[in-house]
Length: 461
Image (tube, rainbow, N blue to C red; front, top):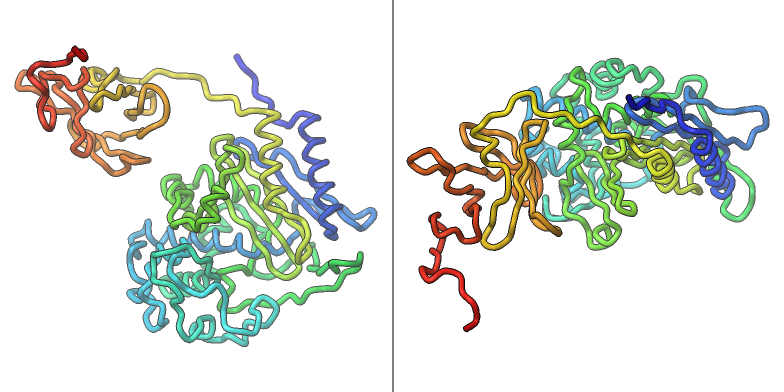
């Protein structure tokens, strides 16, 4: 039997330590802390600091900025799953009078609501939230800068509205709902809207001198749901594991998969970079590795949480400086280091518990026109359909009725695959969104759309 290496190998740990040491030194940050999660548990913590004899650990709080948005998105998806709202509802249905009510809840989650990126001045991250006591104070006079749903335009006020939406439906402050419904069930006792000892102070580092300036630590008020939270690498490591696996006390795996699915049209530059946005989560393609997560930036602090579902590896990086280290690149590198040095050991292959003969007879080779496809019945009870060779349209299907299956991804997501049978009960062909798949190329025994030439296949002569 194969034994699993629960702890990281010494060479891997040294590579991780080297990466954060370089980031702290070259990024000129007072301190940098990091954690790596594998198979749902933290397997490494590291720290670098400019203070001799002081090593911040996984319990020291840092401000996490816009990673807060992912927590807010979890709350909104909880409301959806309970039936309190629909993601396609316009905001006006639940939170009237904002002036941005035509944007849907899904659009606000995906930053496609058309709202401005920031609040009216002064700079909300460096001034008291009491300057914006009303919800209208976080929106510009004309809240919609772009037609709702047309383009991705990152909006901090959009998440301020989502926080207000949570408060409206739950009739309780956003941070209290978050604590009760997410933080406490997941055991995130060191995450909250205000710092608790021990915590790092936020600093600005002079760009042309090795000198520092303390940054103000403001309460964001109405904008709290966009970037207020403090947390630790220990808590965020547990949160990262939740974002992969789900927890039925908070949010199920299917809803988290929905959060990790692209929901916003990518800008041209994002398409070149291979990045996109889901529902409260950023999606990036890093050298062929799909990463999801979020970054955070507020005066005095930078943060990043990145995870690879395929590798089941996540990384968290927190610093206490306004600018300097490219924390998302560091987090991505930590995921890559572990994934490449210690590749995930796959689960053992296991056969199906039961085999349905009527489904088994569908397995094998099919043709869409002249293109050969393979249909497989997998141990998870799904059907998998894709070209025999090369790229092309492929999807998995979940049984949706007697003789029908629903597409789960790709071109055929949501489409119905149906086994069409002859009067004697044998399978004639597969129908997939009007596409006909036959056992032979343009099988003349099947009612192929457009018909089959009666003279059949021929040569040039």
